[in-house]
Image 1: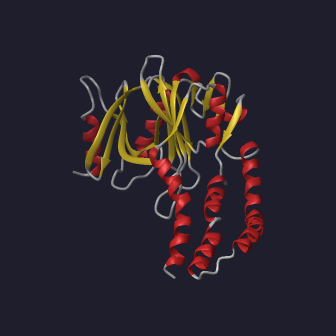
Image 2: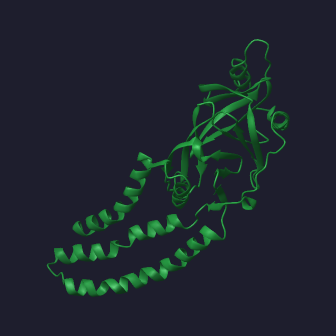
Image 3: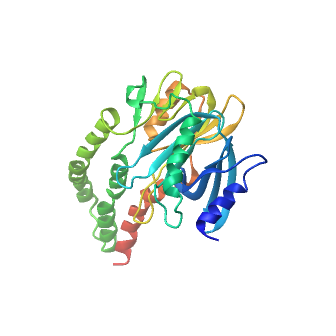
Length: 313
């Protein structure tokens, strides 16, 4: 079975009596830092989603087209369409789709039709300019990860010197204490410019990921009242050579219809959580277990390395 045939079959299987499949496309479903490959299409009343791994169907769902708002952007380099859909009752959906897909020749024609059909099912007022919204702007912090990593490495030289001197029975505590101010000055020369940039980043520049106001949290494609937010889970992320992980916040939402679902806000910084607490102290905020492990690992690993290396030299 070709990939195109698999797309048609997997989405057709989701149709109910009297429905027809419209505008099937291939793309990715984005949830936090995770991307799922899949097929997407419409019936007359639902968004159809079929996620795949190779040629194996891993998950399917039908989402009613009860749409609150949509936001469609096209990336500058890859020309991919990033489609954000907010529903009146249920988790939002972010789909990324390319105009051309290998082995699926219908993508070129179906993607524009997919977008047009989505727009026809959406309210006219689809765009929120966060920079013009009233409230406290929460910005993506570009420098905090670098500052944190630099701070975790700062004890390494001192620890390595102490371990080496202990091995040689040549540790002079007075000399070490006198060296600390010099070490702090050296680190300060490197860090202070980035700390200043970080402060400016918070108040003057950087992508706005949300706006907190008296009534709730304003997002690019949604508005959430404070009473709807049951819990916020903070997920700190550190990118590496092999993976790209961004910090994000997961909001557990209870809608007016008592439905519970999660909204992930990418690049949401820790200071934004404090601003939310100011407006609604009752909201429970916690760190994800993976996030705690990531932070502790990065904080402790340089010090452990600085202890181990001298012991085996």
